[in-house]
Image (cartoon, rainbow, N blue to C red; front, side, top):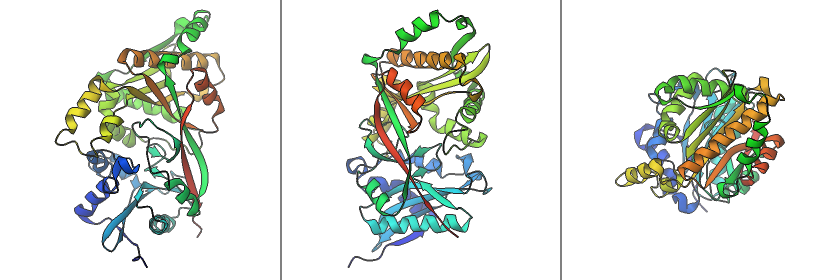
Length: 378
């Protein structure tokens, strides 16, 4: 009979580092796990770097069997107890292929969240829906930044653990060699009387803090009514900008302005994941060179994590033209950078309007991630 699974809170620097490195110890990319740069994962749990930790409690646990680490999990709950509407998160999930390990990890997160008043637990979320979300269930053959990867056995194990399937998140990939949007949109735009009052501009690197604030404002408005939406706080936006700064500056952020008012945003980040996957979390001794090469132009593809228009303009012709102009600008930038593919991710599975827009590019669905949930009871 196998030894029992012991789950305990991360305690001390050694266990914190074990938590960071566990996906690599479990086989890393070869076993199907995402292995973010160790430095990036450390920063997520560093209150000196991640200002969002002042607003969120994010405890971590490790699972052991016979003293050997076999799994990890984290939970997330707002310190004000209000922001998540009673739903706590679980994520940073990595484990050996053993249902007993998963049950023990989920149990630790479940009990902690219930003690704080959560009525439901949702995940995987690392650590909220605004960060890495879901477990990969199909497709996703091209790794992308901040899109999690896991072994194919994990989703069935989450089903078997008694969690309910709650929402699917989709990726749509445009092959630039087949792109049909720009000529079609240019013809439409030429006939539109309002074209001179619509402008698309790039992010101004010299005013990064101000521009990140604008991105946050547009995101919080455009995504506010989406399923599961959580507003991004100023502290969270500042931390994400610090973490993603090299990608933002090497990629592109576009703002759509109507008569001088910002009404939409699109962002592109170069796909450094193929280079990062070969590092197994480590930048030393040769990782820096590979990452710098990818950032300097060695990437072959990109991800578009943001594409949205303010709610006040939805249903207005300006919205459709602003969306078309943002897509044209982003596709043109990708072409100039030599990126052969652009993944738009993620999109809620029930967002038929966006999925229809993707089909017209054409950008068919290329990957599916899933979120599960469970009631906690009291």
